[in-house]
Amino acid sequence: MAVNVVAIILAGGKGTRLKELTIHRPKPAISFAGKYRLIDFVLSNCTNSGIEQVGVLTQYEPLELISYIGEGSSWDLDVHGASVTVMGPYTSRDYGFLWQGGTAEAVIMNMPFIEQYDPDYLLVLSADHIYKMDYRKLIDYHIEKQAELTISTIRVPKEDTSRFGMLKVNDQNRIIEFEEKPKETDSQLASMGIYVFNWKKFKEEIVHKYYKHLYEGVDFAQDVIPHFIEADSAVYAYEYEGYWRDVGTVESYWKAHMDLLGTQDELQLHDYSWPIFSKTPNLPPHHILQGAKVKNAWVNEGCMIFGEVYNSIVAHRCVIEKGAVVEDSVILTSAFIEHDCYIKYAIIGDEVVIPAHTELIGREDEILLVTHDNLEEILETQSRGD
Image (tube, rainbow, N blue to C red; front, side, top):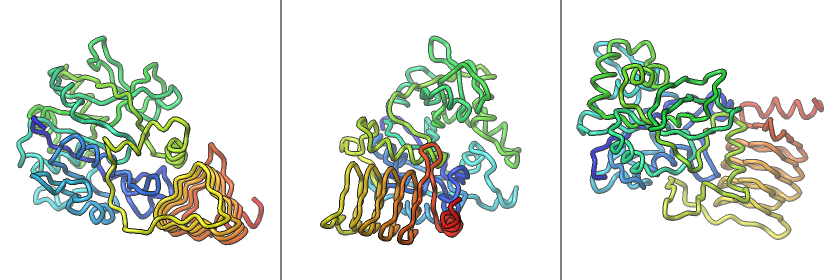
């Protein structure tokens, strides 16, 4: 990019509403479409947008993300001056061990990483959303508006407003009100958790104000954004109109997969002009065997399908035996569905083996999640007919 930008990706979330999916890994590391990790989307957006200096802030169960990202070669973030650096909590002479209690706190603690590049702009990103965005357009808008903070926004249904930071703007798109996860609001303009700051302004207004209060959990939504608005700083909304999904719950995670199978695929993973890069194993092509039936499904590499798969996503290295039927479901990596099973409205976790003749049926509004951590309990419930 022509302007000097450092991107910071917040990747330390637990993702507790995803239940057993995130017991042993951070939310940004869970898979999507059987091929990607959630963090692939934001890393690929950075690469495609020409942003070369990227920091990834981890915290909860960081090992898998650290190993996965490595030097960033899968996203071309290790060539021609580009780099990605993965960082986590650390010990400080002043504070002892610092567990990052808030999103802004995590950025402030890693200020030396940003300062080494002396950027004009700081781009703060979340690692756990599904979307494609050209960040150059966002930054150009920020510059055009002469903004000190720009928040990327999207319109959400009225029933979802309590899940997001909601804001109101004037006729110039300047933000005049912001409220995090309100119980009631007449606005449908939600923050995407994507921010552009003038770096010098951020240091003056935020780092100096909050550096001595790091243990208090300094947060962008709770502290930083209200501070900028109350100080009458130039805070603007950039309205994004593309596909964007917050997959923070089991149901929304399942629904985002079903979006890929719909008649209107808004995400368009097959659009090679904006590729989503990933670090995937080298596997043979999937094998649909004689007698198998597959309709409107994504079946990834290394799979062997003997049974029937309808309107479902099957990750790599899965086996679905003869007589097994999978409908409206997501089957994660290396799962094994034995013969004569019936699975509908379910998510089957990594390396889970579903015994023969098992029925696992959820509902569209209450998806059945089956992992190693709850498999035995679910099978006992099924055997009792509860």
